Amino acid sequence: MKNVYTLLVLIFGGFLTGFAQGNDPAAKAVLDAVSAKFKTFKAVQSNFTLQVEDGNGKVQGTKKGTVWMKDGKYKVNITGQEIYCDGKTVWTYDKASNEVTLTKFDGGQGTITPQKLFTNFYDKDFLYKLNGEKKVGGKTIQEVELTPVDKTKPFHKVYVYVDKASKAITTTKVLEKNGNKYTYSVQNFNGKAKVTDDSFVFNKAKYPGVEEVDLR
Image (tube, rainbow, N blue to C red; front, side, top):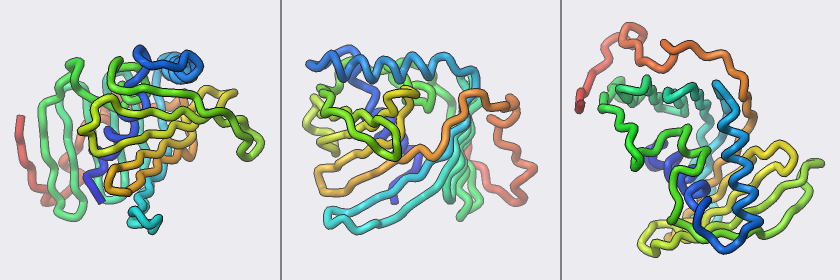
């Protein structure tokens, strides 16, 4: 399975990059509502699963994870990997190798963070349309289809499923040109999470023998 953070970037970045440019006002309204709702939260915790299927529909792997977000900080825990960011440094810890890589955080416009993945940080990359609504478990789910303007991207379609009542993402599917499909499913979402600032800093003392690779 690819680097987990790369997948999160692909999935979240994929469905929230078309807010300003597109040809379906109804789809724009749905995505704008998701962004506006997210911006009202001070701290967020969300549990999710990430499933990968090959071109034949065979599941290649499934990972469970949790993401925490507060102000410009974030933390991602997913099977085999932990990512911390305090707004200055990003620590990526690989459990199998007991190695942590430090990189300098770049908060510029071109940087993708979990917070930006829930908001309209791109404006020109996708065409989108609202495919309609369907009932799922008593909820009304809206499906937004996005097609990348840049045909060199490794994926050709992104589907976003939004709970119409809560204005929250329930599922995102990314279809790659090679047939692989990545499905991100939100298990729960807490917009009133209690998170301390030190939660976003990698504590070396908790990982005996950890090897540091400082790329800052």
